[in-house]
Length: 289
Image (cartoon, rainbow, N blue to C red; front, top):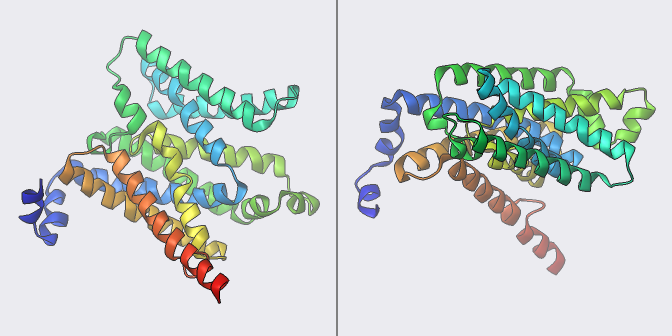
């Protein structure tokens, strides 16, 4: 392995994979989904919805299996079950004394378990590993179209309702006091979250898509106090880490989804340590001064 990397120039490392159509497709889709998830992750970070993102990403599992069994696109089944899980969480929370985080844990583990059972019982060619961990290197043209459509819809919704969603995530009480319908925004954001989780299925899979919905926003949050700049930094860090992760996966023959998320985590650790204002080393210098 060391000899292989030693014999490859930096130019070859970046250019050679582009001679393969599957790599060009994987890089394009991964960068796009990374950017979309990075944009949404800013709202998720401000709203404190890490656990909700985890719930929705896992709850789409049975939808993928049911869609395959019915001959439908994976994205349709995943979206239906993603939104269904959100509705169920809201219903149980309103009708019981159980706290929201407990309800979220119950719903997403139940849906995920249902998906595993369906995979084991429904005879199909579904590769469980691809569902769980993604497979951008093997993405088909039809899946590319679905991913592009879903990503475009997510971006469109976030841009159209940007100001209201930003205010809702910053201060829902204030948003409600000035006449904004926070109930609609709540379910709109959850629907967009479900769509983003569906888009991330092909790149990093069900298990790791939650990292793409959290890590870029958390990284950008350490680097700036301005929301516009936070959006830009999150999109850039997520897209770049997706591209680098795909390259590393290609040359090292490792799981692509894990590679992408690992690069994102490394970028977060760098920001955590060296961010100009909120990095841990900067904080220590301020304390000692």
